[in-house]
Structure formats: C-alpha cells, structure tokens
Length: 119
Image (cartoon, rainbow, N blue to C red; front, side):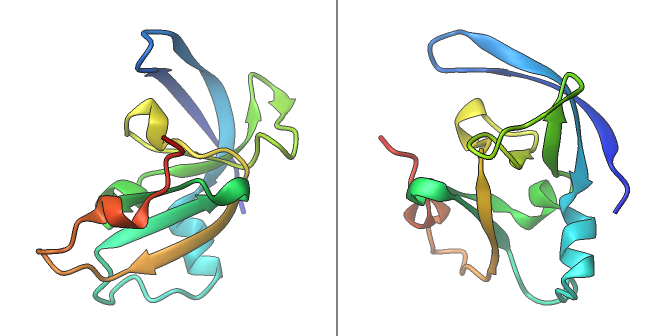
C-alpha cells in the first residue's frame, strides 16, 4: 500500500500541543485490502490498541483517517505505532493499533459504550 504524507496537530486536554509530519496508509485502503464491505450498513469503526484502549468513530470520519507508521521521518516504535490519526480530539487518536472493527450501531446506541479511554 502506498504511504501518504499527513500533517496533523492535536491539543491535549491539558493544553499541550503535539503533532508532526506523519506517513501512513489510509484506513479506507486497509479495509479494501482486507476485503471489507464498505457498502454495508456499518456506522462506526472501533479502533483498539494494546492494553484495551479503544475508540469508536463514525465511519465517515474513519474513512478519511490514516494508520501512521512514521513521524517526522522516523519509524514509530511498536509501543507507538501504528497510530490511528483522524480529525478527532487528541484522546481519540490511538497508538499501537491492534484491531479495526466495523460496527452497526442503532441511532439509540451510544458509541462511547464501545470505547475504553482509560479514564
């Protein structure tokens, strides 16, 4: 899969900013290679990391996201990569991604019930 250049900056709840120039593969390409039916009725993508950290984002947000494997020209170490980068709050980026799971949630379902943000 071709790697794309991604420039992103995030701000933590503490006010600290972090980011950089990343390289990674689009989530849409990862799902396509895995032969996932993107025309199905999935509404959200659950992104899980080592240590049970997980976020749940709308499919539309996920399909414009990337799995980054480099930051500022350096490979991400296993405890940091691959990293889920989307246009989301900093707490919903995920390092050391281990699983992607498409979910179909009813409008009455709360996506946060599928998350484990560690706090």
